[in-house]
Image 1 (cartoon, rainbow, N blue to C red):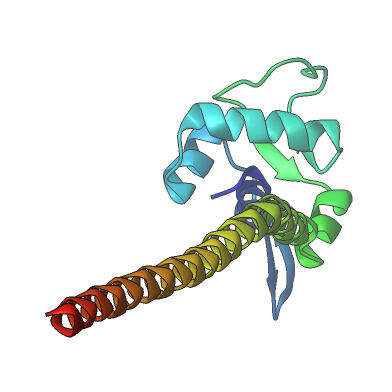
Image 2: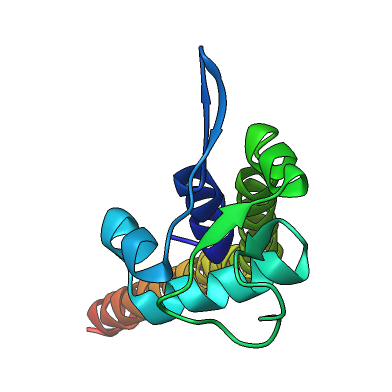
Length: 161
């Protein structure tokens, strides 16, 4: 699972858009980690990133540096917008598309090279077969000539007798 997907899930844990209206939850990194079944350190890193984007805020005033595992965090309006419109989910899909595009950009020349090598080898084997057939034909001509020459000599010997 990508970090962008995890960011989206963290925002989802802190926010719910229910038929009754918007609900925000105040959660600690430990609670978020338990719910998402990911390490607390990962949650701390994600919260630090989301805090830098002003999508999550700490409930302790003046606690701007670091992540406290016992403090609680809540989602901001920017975080609600990011979660509602699936910003991090879309980022994850975009990243996946770019990775696939890069993979094909790497594989295309490699596969082209393999196809070219196979084509060269197959054409070389065709030429080789043609040359072998020519040589076989020449050998048969020589053998036939030798047979004819041998028969002619035998005929000449018979004539002389």
